Image (cartoon, rainbow, N blue to C red; front, side):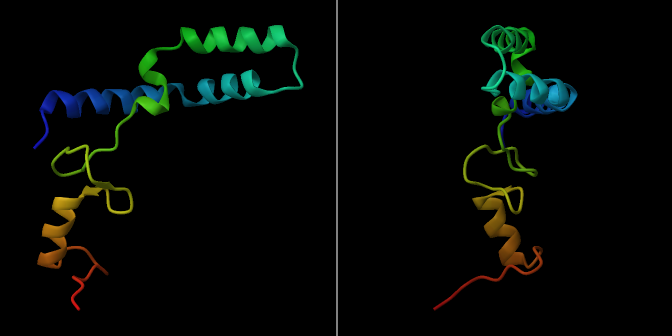
Length: 101
């Protein structure tokens, strides 16, 4: 089980990313548009720098939905490898079967 503070910090980051998503995307598109003047692009980059640091989507960490563990995360299931194996062996994940050969 991950520290509760780490899980809460990640949840706050997700909320900030969602709040600033539209503004961030518009500024990023402006900053990367080669057809615009160099000063307009620079202004867009400076405005991006004024946004909260945690509004950047790359700062959000994928974590297991049950334990909060950040490593061994499977996006398709939203679980880490350990929980995926436990729930799969119990038959609680539809369509997942334990392989044997």
